[in-house]
Length: 375
Ligand SMILES: C[S@@+](CC[C@H](N)C(=O)[O-])C[C@H]1O[C@@H](n2cnc3c(N)ncnc32)[C@H](O)[C@@H]1O
Image 1: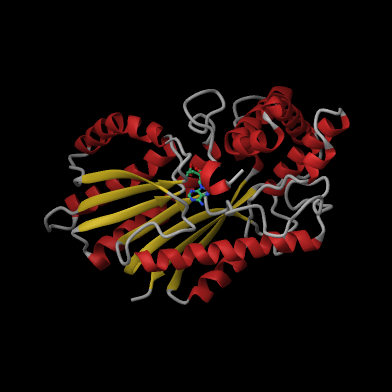
Image 2 (image 1 turned 30 degrees about the vertical axis):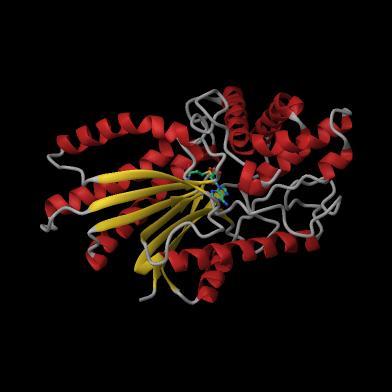
């Protein structure tokens, strides 16, 4: 699979779609909301743009994409109606993702969204600023905008995806694993690290050309608390359970061992120090804030309402659907569509057993970087 051409979250509104299975990402977006609001306010106050240009990079589709737009509009209209008395600013949103993203899903939901946001503002006695929404297909590891044209970049849970499986990670170098697992050789972990450094540095370089002086960026990623690259908490555990499921299918003769050995997920979970270092190397950005929060294991799935065995079962189903919505296109292209039902059923069982076990549970570490372009 060529990631930048073919990779996508599961399209549409079906049971396994991203729109129906992105609750973890929604919780992440809600946790980062105060920083997004702060960034919007600071751009308004410091830069006074007549037309504010805002880009959401790796926007995907569904409720989370619209949630971001609505947070921005609400913040602007509250500030304009309450404090800033000048003529209302216009806002241009660019929603970016890879070309295979379900952009039509976004476009088709915009009309209803507009009605809701207008009603919502009217209830508070406010008027939303004139705003315009455009889709922008393309990789955020390439140039997307003209020089000096964007006031605010936002990206949530997207920059963790690499441009490719790490360069030079060939054949069965990562035998039996699909990511950085317990038996992954340190040299393979290093290849993952190198690929992230290369990709994230390029991402920052591109954005620095496109952002206006003094513009802001809010970047949220799934990262790690630990310095140890082998320990990305809940993310490591999820990939380990998926590898375990694939090893079961190899043992049953459903999947060839070479197929498993040559499959590696192009995701990297950086530590806050790694992110800081790469931003500092770029020299054109100041770090205004960096926040870590831990999404504990209970908030990673939807079992809060259920109890005991049912809760563990619900957790397995919910985590399996979340993982499937994000990785089905990768798994189907490498192993074929025939194994999808089986692998995600096995994963759901593995996750259920993990929840029922006495093992200490790990959460997912979320890191939000708040950056400002130097003048
Ligand atoms: C987990 S989703 C997050 C979506 C959304 N921001 C949210 O919080 O729900 C990650 C998104 O990043 C997109 N993505 C991955 N690599 C990308 C790239 N190089 N350029 C643009 N989008 C990319 C994927 O297609 C996917 O839609």
